[in-house]
Image (cartoon, rainbow, N blue to C red):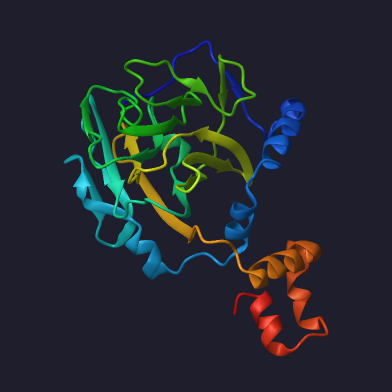
Length: 273
């Protein structure tokens, strides 16, 4: 069910020292990360009840897919040959900043593994093996096998992502990645290994978009975990001050907040308690 990506492609693994110069490119992209995204990622992740609310929709899927009874965050794809199958999330977003994690084992991706967003009108099944998400005007996706961005791919060729890659390059994406949807700015982006890869798509404002993936690998299991969201309202001064203190301390020293000469309620606030 889609065993290998076609040959002739240079594979880039950022964990390989040979590609260390490209890490400067990644660092430069990380500097473009919006401040609101930094704040969201610094917040404690959503609890399991919220994660389930934002999980896969068992009523909005290809018939070759089912959400697992024992883990509502995971779906399983039946081993159906010559079929590409997709599923949408339960919540569609029209406003705010939202981040979710997709966990998809590299060995279960096959030839077409696409992660992105879609409207309620995007198709969820196609005959044959294809990059279904991004194949039309109702969905936008990143093909993890080819490092290509697709939207209306029947009429437009895919774009290489991250942007610093050469057209023939493919970027090794680990078993999990973050999807960043900013409905207030109308953008979609991705984070891999803690590196923000920049804006992948623009022009999404005014739509209602759902998390979506399309898969071809038989028995693959893909998990979605909603990280958190931020409303579009301006951040409060207290939120900004908390963020400044936490940045000044650094992640490795957050456990030293209790030593600060502050009232207990302020220490708890700094710790999101």
